[in-house]
Image 1 (spheres, helix red, strand yellow):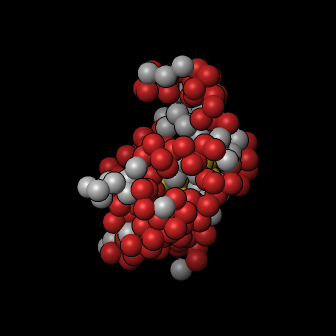
Image 2 (tube, rainbow, N blue to C red):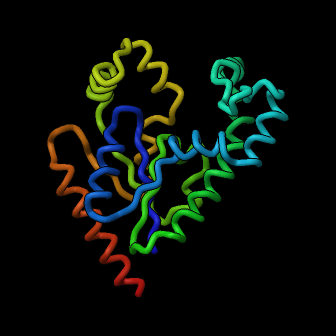
Length: 199
């Protein structure tokens, strides 16, 4: 089984690329939604977050106290690293368990912060989805109904595109100049050739 990491900045179109992979029978693990699920269900994460933030981090109904977590996260950059050190190892382990259950040649992991969170350790190849900043700004503003400065703030919190592309094995360009479907098909053909070469 080949594990593909999909990354890209906010508004780059990585979720759309993931959808194209799913249409081609490649299961995709979305780290963002799975991390949210695990923060509620995983005993190790619950224990770690309570140790960091106290019992109030979980409400009486078992839900996460999002305002408390957000306040802690934004108070100090190191606080985000502390929360990530609790959450990300469990997400990695969950991805590996999930991948083992998939009866497919290829599986993918989608993460905006793939490099920042060390998820490249659990995949064989990384694909960066790239779009110019002005296109991404417009997409996110239209999609989320937020201001340009709010989008810029979110972008600034992520690794820059150039670094992501340089550290990736493949880059998919999503600026409207090339078909995403063709690029995804080419990616899978290339991976097939690599597999045959290693076989």
